[in-house]
Length: 474
Ligand code: NAD
Image 1 (cartoon, helix red, strand yellow):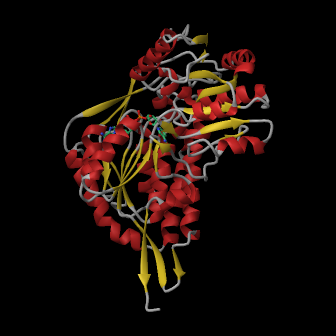
Image 2 (cartoon, rainbow, N blue to C red):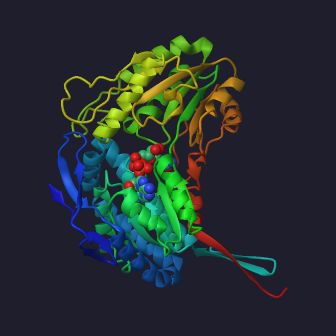
Image 3 (cartoon, protein in one colour):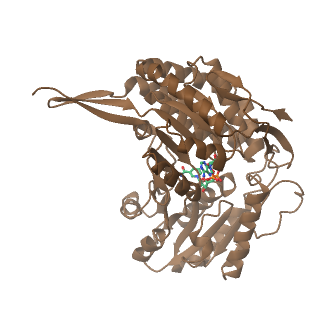
């Protein structure tokens, strides 16, 4: 078992203010794989003070110099990529090969992207008698979830550092070990002390202490809509800037002229990735009433390919869920779906056979789900897909938009043109057209209760910038 007993503050590994610790559990063995400090308000104060003290000199550096620092972090992560994939597969449960490609590949790419953008971004421009200057917002608290832990950290930290902000990171207490590796990499990359700080602990204690802190200028949060609402309330007292990447209940709209086999397969994949623990998962599959029987059959067949098992075992496509609490929550939703009268096409609430340990759930698909039922409205965050039928395109759009969320979605049609027309009517931040792939450098974020602000790409950098206008005599 690994002991992570220090926090990274002001360029040093320091003991936390109190003795409390949190166990980090391996999702497939249920064993404690490490303990981390359960930090408190005093630790938050120390980290914010360090970030504040470092801000003036870091923000005054030429952006290209900050870019060089980010490039060194990228190289450091690359050098430790195998170890990071092991760590993340342990704490999150994602199969190792997928972890290496997605969980580790994307943060490396992100640090590389922002290293380059720092050099190329237009930091100043002239409009009439004004010079418009982009300046960093200040000290940023980054609070992140567990499902793609290092990806979500990198999306914030790389962009904030490129912008010239200094950072206090509070990663998820459920999957925090990758953040310790990142802090070691940042330390070895030689960033000035205080530019990046890592504290750990629970959301309501050290998380809220950061959100409340008068010296924190901005909170960049990814996580549940419930916690996002609370963070908005607390931050409002200090009129802080808040960026929120929250939950989702995304729909894949399959139109009547779509290639049904490709559309169903694509949607099942987009739902079950990371055992359904993806904020942008396509958890509702909307099909024309006339094609329901065919779609249900194809979906159940596609689910068979999602073998459940040990993330380190080599052949499994679906690992366990992150925790016992999450597994029980998901099983509860499956039972609710059955009680509410949806057709169980495959899976179910029982534990998969031959897996006595680990938080496994069978890939589950419900057919004939009512659009207003619990499983079609609430974010389940597990491998559960709901098939919903519609009569015409108007109704499909209405159902797709008919939840409090607005994060992502997909449209499948006989042509990209037709799909795009419908995609433009969806009230979500991103839509995949006929199986279009996720683009790491395109803006990512939500409408409605999926949050506000955008991460990734140029938009992700701009989130961390203020705009100043210097007016000259005309
Ligand atoms: P969570 O909201 O429970 O926790 C996220 C982080 O917030 C953790 O670090 C937690 O400690 C902290 N936190 C919790 N309450 C807090 C409070 N009152 N003040 C300050 N910090 C607090 O979410 P989770 O269970 O870790 O992650 C799953 C959720 O994240 C899902 O709802 C998912 O959709 C969402 N998510 C969204 C995106 C996106 O980009 N939109 C990406 C990934 C996950």
